[in-house]
Image (cartoon, rainbow, N blue to C red):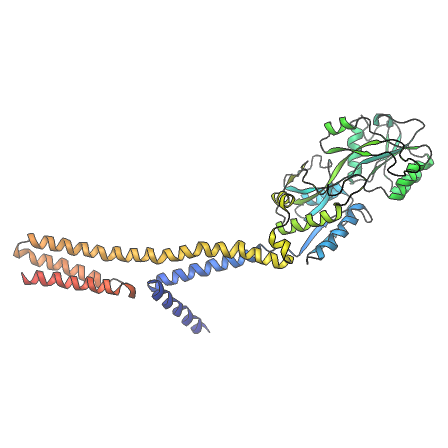
Length: 444
C-alpha cells in the first residue's frame, strides 16, 4: 500500500515537472500547497454548515412563550432543523441562561426592560416579536389615577424570575413602592389571582397582555367593581423608560354590544424580543426570523398585520444578519431551493470558488517565479563568460592559464546545476558556449 502511494506521488511529481517546467522538489511543493488548500477548504466547508439542532429557552408550561416555541419547532422541522425547547420561569431565567456559557442554549424569548445589572454585551437581538402591554385589574369604587395609590395594599405581581414581576417592580419603584414596605407583593397563578381579586382578598392583579388567559380577561372586564387601570401618565412612562411603548385598548374592543371597555384605555408595555447568543449561524437566524414572521406577523389586539417581527433596537443590538433579513429577506438560494441544498451550494460558493480564484494565480505564479530563478542562474554564468572573454582580450600569454582555471570553475559549477527538462536547450547552449570560450583560450 505504501509503495503504491509512493508511486502515485512520484507520478504526480513527474506530471507537474513536465507540465510546469519544475524540478521534482518544486513540483512536490506545488502539490503540497494544493493539497493543503483543499484540506483547509474541506474543513471550512463542513465547519460553516449550520447545526441541525438548535436549543431555545422558552417559559412555563402552558405559557405564551412555550406555545410560541412549540410553533417555532414545527416550522423549523419543515426545513430539517430540530428545535429543542427548555422550559423556564420566564424572561429573567431565559436571559440568565443565554448569558451563562455553561448552559447549552442558542436563543430565547426575553421581555424588554428585565436585564437590570446583567451583562448582556455578548447577546444580540433578532428583532422585536410583539408588544406585551401591562394590564392591571383592580377593585375600587372610583378610578385609580396613579400607581402610587396602590401603596399599602395587597398586589399580585407575578412569580419570581418572570418578566411580569421584574416589570411590575420597576413601575412600582418609579412610584415609590418597594419590596419590604407596607405594600404586600404577592405571587399567585392566574386562576388564583383572578379569584382573589373577585373575592376582594387583593386590591390589584398585574398581568401581561399576551399571557393573561382569554377567559380571565373576559371575566375581569365584566366583573362588577373591577376596573382595568388606565395609564394616565403613559406618555411620561415611555419617555422615562425607553423599553416601554404606549399601547391603546380601543373602546368596545372586548365586547361591542356591551361597550367593553366603555372608553379608550391607554396601556404601556415592552416588546418581547428574540434574543440569541452572538455567533448564531446566519442560516439559522433566517429560519428563526421566518418562523417569527409566520407566528407573530398576523394582526392582533395590539398589533397590525405585518407589524411584527420588527427591527426595533432597544437593550440588545440587532445582528447584521437580522437587518439584512428585514431589508431583503432570505437570499435567492434559500428562497428557491430546499434549506439543506441551498446551504450546501452556498458553502460551495463561499469556500471553493474563492479558493479556486486564489489558487489558480498562485499556482501559475510558482512556475513563473521558478523559471525566472533558473534564468537568473543561467544568466549569471553568461556574465562570467563575458567577463572571461573581455579579460582574454587584454591578457598576456602567461595569464591564459589563470583564465583557463577560472573557466574550469565556471564549467564545474554549470555541470552541477539542476535544471528541469524545459530548460535543457538553454542549459546545453550554455555548455556549448563554455566550450566555445575554451577553444578561443587554447587557440590563441
